[in-house]
Image (cartoon, rainbow, N blue to C red; front, side, top):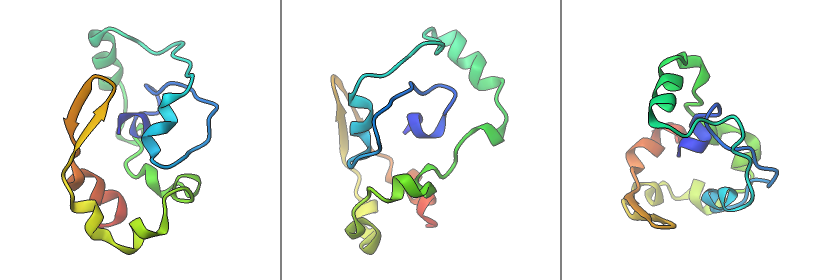
Length: 104
């Protein structure tokens, strides 16, 4: 999810990590200083180095602490491809991209 991988584009929230992780972004957030036009976002992405991306955000102990143990004990759960519905947007969950964060 982009909010975890691109810290320079994510809104600021004062809400702690909860499971499912997507619900963190359902609360009030500050978008001050974050560009809204596609051209500005592309420029910002182009100006970043590889070190400025968080490739394995779920390694953070505060995030891992809220993920139920059953998801770490049964890695088959990570192989499911299901649609994610967020407000009016529906997209397929790319589980193969998530697997790298857990060492697969």
